[in-house]
Each structure stands twice: as structure tokens, then as C-alpha cells.
Amino acid sequence: MDWTTVGTVVGATALLLGCLLTLVAAVGLLRLSDVLARMHTTAKPQVLGVVLSLLAVGITLRRGADVATLVAIAAFQLLTVPVATHMVGRAAYRTGQVDPSALDHDELADELSEEERSRD
Amino acid sequence: MNPVVIALCVGMLTVAALLALVRVAKGPTMLDRVIALDVIVAVVVIGLCVEAVANRHDTTLPVIVVLALVGFVGSVSVARYASRESDQERGRG
Image (cartoon, rainbow over all chains, first blue to last red; front, side, top):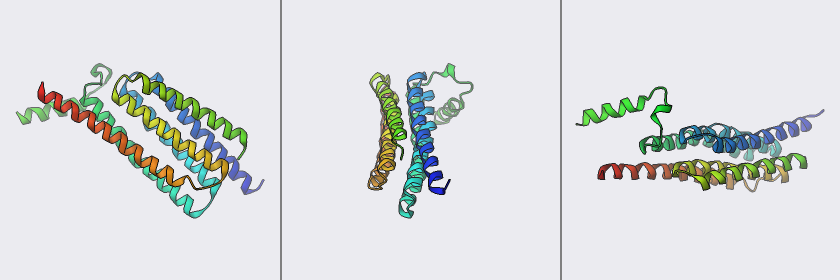
């Protein structure tokens, strides 16, 4: 078994895992109950799926410039998706789409009420 | 790359895109749709990756960069707009 075969097998596995994780994210999108729970599916399986399929492209192409672009895309995804998800969660909380009884402890409510008290 | 692997990937991505589309149609809120559209953008990105692997070329890599950028700006601006709208409603109420 030479290195080209190993590369092909690893690439195929990464590609299949990436697609499977996206499928898991889509199933979670349908099965989970509210916005905060659904956010998990986009933030975790989806990002890992994208990074794995970028890895598969990098292993298949094996060219310096392409690998640099792919690493940049992966780093960008890892930086921006948490920010976007945080913004969605913030908007959900502030528009009252979060059920307070589903939370164990609501630290943001304490913060917000303190803020309002100091404003009065 | 093995055509069976490619076919499996395309099948899984198709099912994932359809499930996300169901969530976009059902809603119930704008934020649910934003999250579902995020998943659809990821499906398109991974689809382009599968295509690049299948045909062993790098011409679609700039498209992937642009899609990653546009997906981020899109969901952040919709989330921003959603919370801004509620601020105005609170001010009126």
C-alpha cells in the first residue's frame, strides 16, 4: 500500500464523514424543539462537516496554493460561525423566543435586570 | 475518487438540503429560518467540495470563499435586524 492509496482512503472517509455530519445537522434541525436547541446543530456538526470536506479537498488536490486557500476557509469558518450563532441566540433571547422554564439558570436575566435598575 | 463514495455524498447532501428546506418552510420564526439557511449554505459549500474532489480541479475554491463570507454576513445581519425590530417594539409599548 503506497501513500497515494492512503491519501485516497483518508480523503474519501473525510468526505463521507463531512456529508454525514451535515445530514445529522439537518435531522437535528427538524427534531429539536426550539431556537436555542437548533442552534447547536448549525454550530457544531455543520462546522466539523465543512472542515472535514475541506480536508478531503486538500488531500485530493495536494497543491500549496490550494491548501493555503482551504486552511484560510476553515479558519474563517471556525471564527465566524460561533459569532453568527451567538448573534442568533442573542436575538432569540431578546425577542422572547426562549422559554425561561427550560433553562437551569438564567444568568443573562440577572445581568439585564441589574442593568435596568442602574438605568432608573 | 470512487464513484460510489461520490454518489453516497451527493445522496446524503440532497437529503440534508431537503430536511433544511422543510425547516425553512415551517419556520416558525425568522431565526429558525436563518439557522436552516445557514445549514443550506453549508450543504452548498460541501457540495462544491465534493465536486472539486470528484473532478480533481480547484476552480471552485474562490466560490467557496465567497459563500462562506456571504453566509456569515447574511445570518449576522438578519439576527441584528431581528433584535433591532424588537427594540423598537419595546420602545413603542
